[in-house]
Length: 327
Image (cartoon, rainbow, N blue to C red; front, side, top):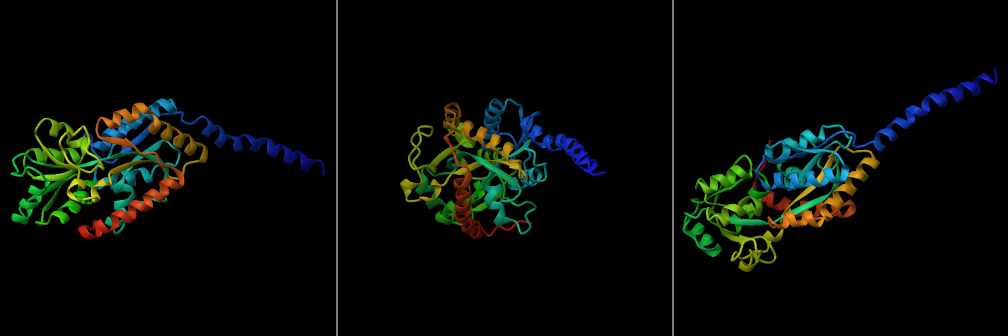
């Protein structure tokens, strides 16, 4: 009998060993199937463009297909809530935005996901400049002319956005406060629909992301009055910066961050973080971004956490000022 217990212990250990090894083996085989990158807006806007660029980059580095899945709605909430409920296995990613990771904290009384706890941050991806565009039928030639027109016709100018509480809405609200004149917000379902409405004259202006409006500005269907960069961009020749008119707030661009659903295992998180960092550092990726007046933004770890905290402090008072509260 005394010898039986040790033999049983050895037998138990032998049987348990394969079970203990399985998670590690599964992680070492990762990724063994395609990944999904969920983009929180419909096709056709800057978010969709960046999501597809990142999917290409990640697929090359992970040697696995990365499928882009557009889930628009509620300023990014629909996509973020969906991803937050997926398994924490590294196969479902989210292209996070200002809305999903910062704005929604202050917009929703009962947010159905936690931006800080429900995801594994992998790294920032890009920063995209804002540009103020107007419909050509509006009788203004420059930014001071627009401000004068707004003040002379209070409540008569409508501005569009990709949705209530999104970056376009809050950025244009910030400008409208500076300009005066009581401009009226008209939300649309996605950036592409908002830009179309501006071209058709349903609204008269908006602060938009450069990639959304650039082709239409070049084609003469929209007029650009100011760009939110420290210096003018050759992509928009002759268009001054907001700074040149004494408005510094718009140097803060829209930004995008890559996240994984849940708290993924450390080896998987490290692989995804490494692939993200390498993608953002790729000169070819930077060149693709430069073509639409965007730039790579490479932050991870503590620097990324500090950045998100800084952005929350920057935008919370703007959201309070806009007096937006969503259910």
